[in-house]
Image 1: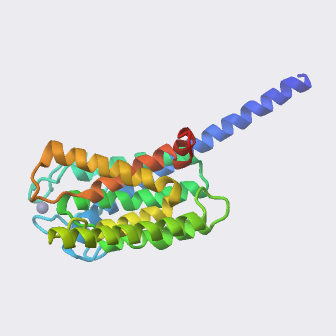
Image 2: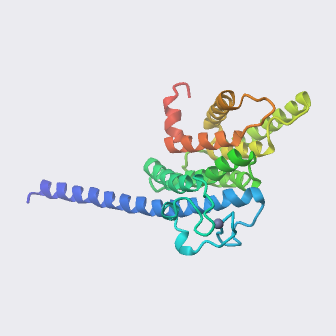
Image 3: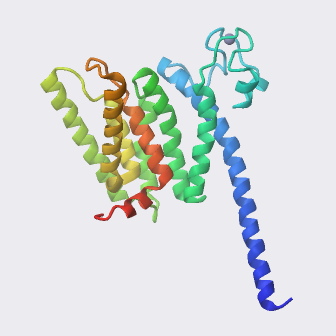
Length: 272
Ligand SMILES: [Zn+2]
C-alpha cells in the first residue's frame, strides 16, 4: 500500500469513528430525552397544582394509584397501555406521549446544530425549560416562576463563559432593557385600560430569554412570538375578554430559534 493510500485509509476510518460516536451520542440523547420528557410531564401536571415534584412517586391523576416502575417507561408504556390507566382506564392525555417524543428530538436537533460543545448545553437547558412553559401556559395561562426566573442567572452564567455566541454585556443589557421596557408597558396598559394586559410571568420569561439570546436576537424573538400570538388570537380566539397564552408562543419561538442556530439566522440578515 502506498503512502497516499494509507493516508486515505486513515482518513476514512477517522470519519467512520466520528460517525459511530455521533450515533452513540444520538442514542444516549434519545434515551435521556425520553426520560426528561417523562419528568417534564410530571412538572406540567404538578406545578400548576403547586404539588411537590418529587413526592409522591408517579401516580394516576384519576384513581391516585401508584404507577409501577415497569409501566413508567417513556413512550413504550403509553403505547402498551393504549393511552389509558392500567387500573381505572382513565384516559392519559396525548400530550404525555408527544412530550416524550418531542424532548429527545429537540435534544438530537440541538446536537446536530451545535455538536457537543457549550452551545449544545446552553440551548438544551433553555429548551428543556421551554417545553413545560409551552404546555403549562397553553393549559392554564400561567408561567410558574420556578421555570422563568432561574433562566436569568442561567443565561448570564452561559454568557460569562468565554467564546460563546452571546457576550455577558449583550446578555445583561438585553435582559435589563427588556425587563424595564415590559414593566413600563404593563403599567402603562394597566393605567390606560384598568386591567392587566401583560402577565408578570411573560415579563420574567422574556427577561430570562433575553439573558440567553442577548441584544442581537432579542428583537426578532419578541417580534416573531408577538406576531404568532396575534395571528393565533385573530384566527382562533377573537374574544377580547379572553386572555391568551403568550408564553406558549414565546416558548415555541425560542425552541425554533435555538434549533436553527441564532448566529446562523443573524448572518442571513444583511444589515446586522
Ligand atoms: Zn387510574
